[in-house]
Length: 539
Image 1 (cartoon, rainbow, N blue to C red):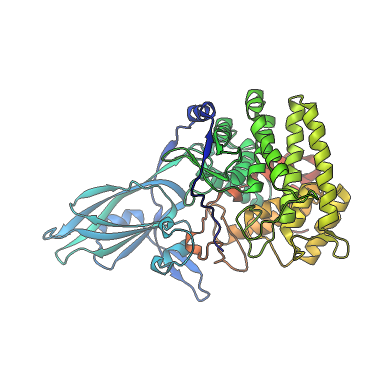
Image 2: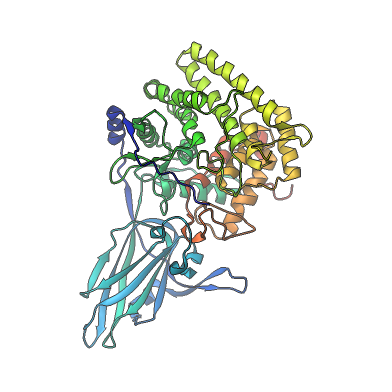
């Protein structure tokens, strides 16, 4: 299922003062030189899974010579984001022809076994991390201009000549990030799985913190509003880089659609451009992002400046996306609301819930600025939307919310209705437990949706279940070899991809970093959950 937007006559509205503020806040990236730990082989086992085996220490590279058909894989020991360089020299009688080599970079070992010529997904093949080089003069130090996100680097010798072989040396990655892991205190749980989940969550965020909060350093390398909301929350309990959040807020507010709608994502290179994709839920998330930033930083000046843009996203939805019964108009299969990847997921009821959720944050913003007339308007509108949601989408016989003309039951709809607080706490708790029992066929696909599910469990005072779900889902990624958390994870189908082919899946993805936020905000230091935080293995 392809999902993108193309507007031929796309017009934008620019607030240059906001963009200038964002430019001043552009971070200077920290750089570190990272060397590979050892050489490995990657092979397929009897179950079709990639198996990594250590083959040599790095000091042994100095005595190795490579000819046509040889491959060598370097393991950097952990996920890296940066710029690679290496030195090649010729050994033999004469260097009489260019060296012809192929480089392949992989976040997970399975990528090294993929044949890019067989790619058949709907995203551009250009995201696949490989390159073919001709080395015309040797010895030569090649500094690759493209930034790569990887743990494994494979060099394959496509051809040399019979007269010489290649020697490789000085293989390094110039790692780049806006933040440093050394500034973070460990989680400090007695449960090592929770410590690992927290650490890998933070590493995922760190690798995505570049000039902006990127959604993924491999792909798409841009600022998505939905991902940004979750990244910022993790940032507040870890790196506390308020300037980067502020920069991204001003970027989204500084360039919008001509009618004031915020784009779903923003390009910061080579020029500042808002994408021509509008997602209702992502635009509405500007309200909670702005509130979270104000609550964490106390920056009232930014709150005052961006408040009109935040509540403006609510007004646009109310004025243009509701029918006469105060229900979000279902726009079918078009890419108008995200919620989650998932074949056939109907978004109507979930979008209604996100609108209610955003209004709750709009009310907080208005109260903070003393805009009590707006508070009354939004409270009235929220009550109307909640009442309409129950009348239209609640199915008493099923005990769950349905969505669309087909009256579809999905996990996403139930979770967002809970987060929107359409029901009181007790009834919401009954709904989440009933949903677990019924296990709707339209399931959750991404860590993004699983985050909201865990958040809903915590909201329903089901903290033990929430912790168990974190360990099951994110812990499952760790057991499957994750150094950073992935864009898509289905334990029953490791090759699942919303893009038609897993070759372009991202294995360091921003929306997957949220366990660190949940663990540090709701569990760490909380006396009530001290025993629970210790371990849930025996429960």
